[in-house]
Amino acid sequence: MEKCKRDIILKDCGCTYEPCSKKGKCCDCIKYHRDMNQLPGCLFPPEAEKTYDRSIKYFCEVMEKRGYKLI
Ligand code: SF4
Figure (tube, rainbow, N blue to C red):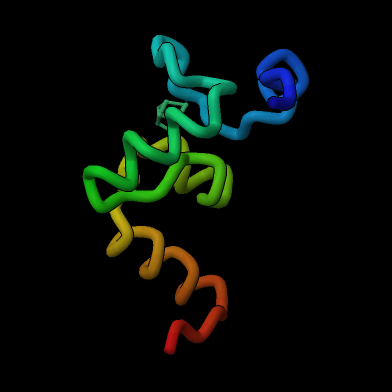
């Protein structure tokens, strides 16, 4: 099994929520948000990420405002 790349990933993590213990552990981060029907913060554009609203609904709203056509 490949070694965890947390130290490398942490440098590129787009999430600004600092107290989170899952930061840099993408597998835990994705599972946590997926279980709540959400998306990880790194998928949101920076200004939207800072709201800490990780809902799929908010993601779709933000991306549609940026010109993406979601289905
Ligand atoms: S997106 Fe959520 S789980 Fe992932 S590092 Fe940020 S606050 Fe933590």
